[in-house]
Amino acid sequence: MDARLERGGDKNKACEKRIGGAYIMTVTLLGYTLNLLSIVGILAAIVMIITEMVKELGIIKRIPTKLTALVISFVVVISAMIFYLNMAESAFVWWYLIAAFFASFIVGYLSMNGWDALYEIWKRFVPSGSFENERDEE
Image (cartoon, rainbow, N blue to C red; front, side, top):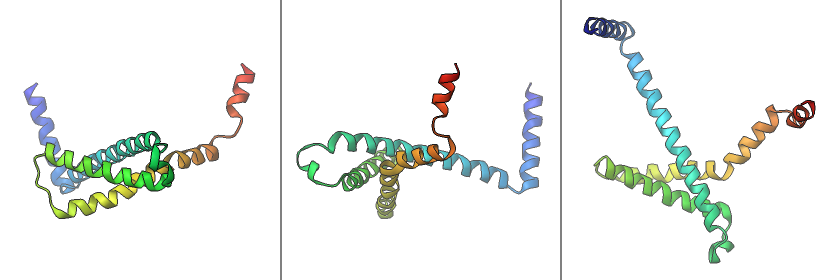
């Protein structure tokens, strides 16, 4: 068994040499991209839930919902950044705050318009009444 693992390792090393390390970089980049998309999606869901919970409270009722969602997304993204830096035991650098500020706009936009965009795509590719026709045929 060890010989097979060892041979597989040699094959991977040969592949790395042949490609020039691009394979490893592609796999690493894909992994980071999937992690980033997952985190953005989770943060957008959190912002959406919090916005729906607080938009009818007292003085917040007077503020436009989109502005409320942007403020909440800024707070959530900054909190997530601080949580990550604490868990990774990393030091805070000033540009992390700027990156989180711009990321909060992406998270806020996704939480405000995500379902509308998904619904528009659904309407475009799924013919209306297709589910009713299937039920009638059964």
